Amino acid sequence: MSDPLPRTISRPMQFTNGCAIGISNRWSKGQYCVILTEVGLVGCGIYDCKTAAEFGQAIAIARGTPQKPLVEPEDLLQAKIVEATPQAKALGIEPGMTGREAVERMLAASK
Image (cartoon, rainbow, N blue to C red; front, side, top):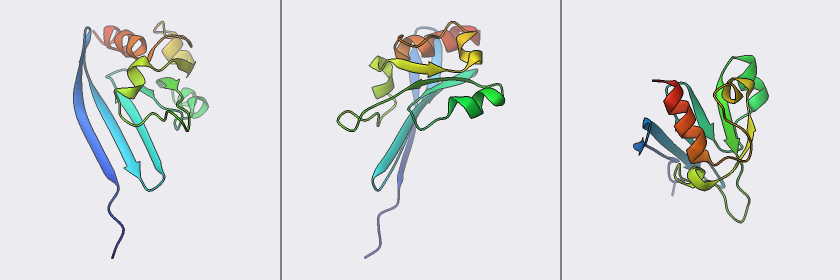
């Protein structure tokens, strides 16, 4: 019997300042999730801020734990931002705010 295929989902997410796309990818013993906006993304700890910053990208990162992993994009909403690229900070995103707050700032910046 072959292994099941990995799973990927993508769905629109409505916010006060607009709409974003929530994405979740899962595979055997792994997963990651992200909320994608027109100007950047709020993602889990799999994303590397240093590389993203070199490419001028606005990225805000929240990190889960083995006990409470970030699996679905909705998991990012209450998670605390722990790192952000300079481009995300220029949008007013700072460590300590929630993922929802970071998404709202990105959506406001795209108007």
